[in-house]
Amino acid sequence: MTCIIAYDIEDNKIRARLARYLETIGIRIQKSVFAVEIERHTFRRMLGRIRAITGDTGNVAVFRLCVGCQKNALKFEQETGESFHVF
Image 1 (cartoon, rainbow, N blue to C red):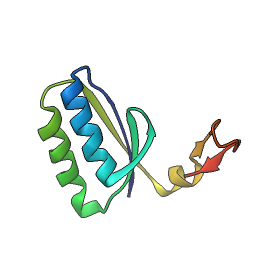
Image 2: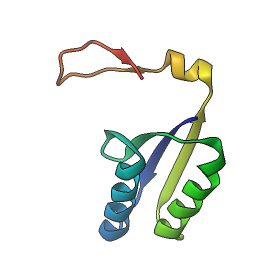
Image 3: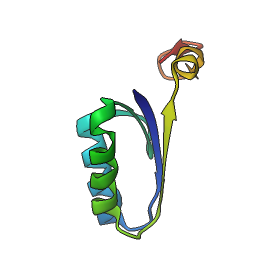
């Protein structure tokens, strides 16, 4: 399953720790947005790890993408010169 994880965390240490964790399991789309490909049976473990890192600090949103959403997702890239590419 593919998940999009976005966060808004003011605390620098917690934000950096969460980013380091997400970099180990996914790819950074933007500074505070990651795409993660994860097995269904490990989804809850990932959520638990995120909760352990963030506690009650900041906001984290996790969006699970269905197959149709994955097929229709576009990413516009200015740096590479590509007008778009599909995830």
